[in-house]
Image (cartoon, rainbow, N blue to C red; front, side, top):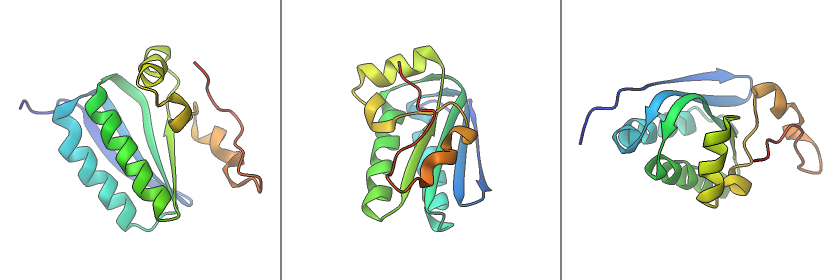
Length: 127
């Protein structure tokens, strides 16, 4: 397996733990992404946000990691959000059957309605 050429960092924004990924995110990025998602869970933030806005490519391997992380967080009573607005990326999510699962938004500001009592969000991006 080749070395991942992208970058990743985690930060906290209020009650959110944010994982920012950049560059090409393929199978080589899986171990690092999984490790960072585990670190975010350990921080105890109720919502994990994965920021894909600076990603120039991703494949199904990383979508699988995100899907598993989402499932685990939701089962534990947490939340999982994806930031992404690039048309090509939304199309890949749609083709993988994950666009309606991830319901990506364009920015952290779009998640302001996340705490709405009826569970709705404002600013969801559609393909």
